[in-house]
Length: 81
Image (tube, rainbow, N blue to C red; front, side, top):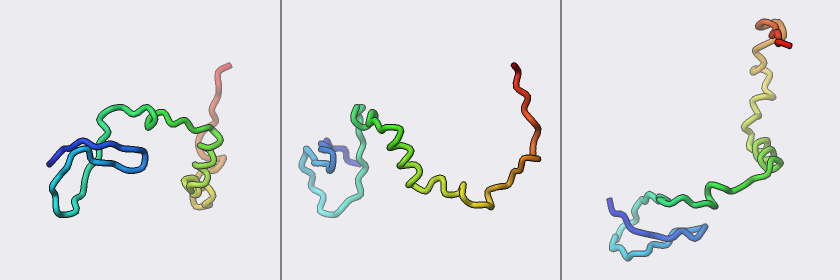
């Protein structure tokens, strides 16, 4: 394995060292230093909800085959007052 430095500009990686590899190669890109922008991209609650709903991740809830429990299943929960 060969390790060389590169610079990520937000869309692509530019190698900072010249390499002599005549064939296309699969590479692994690591970000060794914490990148504040990567970890702290804030998204509003509205955007999060919209993205979740539009992703299809909750589509199974509309499937009647998922309705396996009824009101007669289980026991009533008694809350302490």
